[in-house]
Length: 129
Image (cartoon, rainbow, N blue to C red; front, side, top):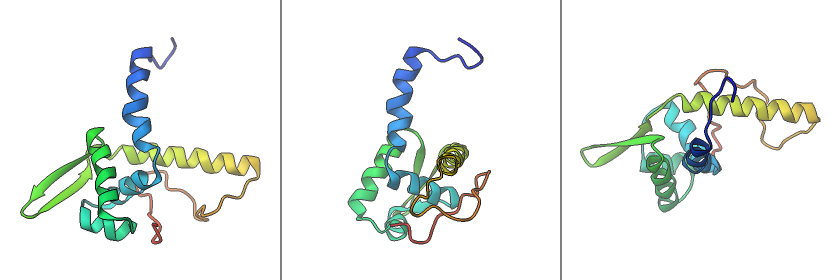
């Protein structure tokens, strides 16, 4: 099969588990925010500007897929990345996306003018809505 051995079964599990978890912009935004620091639902609601029910649904998907974890501390539940490496994957995908836009001569709306981070220090825009 080559250098990267992938079975059909693995692909059939990988796509619904990981790819579908990342196919929603708010979920990616949540991951970027959690990459900065653990947060509570109310903090995420405030930062994202989405209703609590919506944020909670996204958190449930990410928890179900094992991408984030929750820890109760007193009255609060803190969410954090289980695998911070997910930020590296997102950074690579964003880099490819921007490179492809440049290749095609496209100008995308809301594309940051600053260079993309090549490590886990992706910055979240302040107007995260």
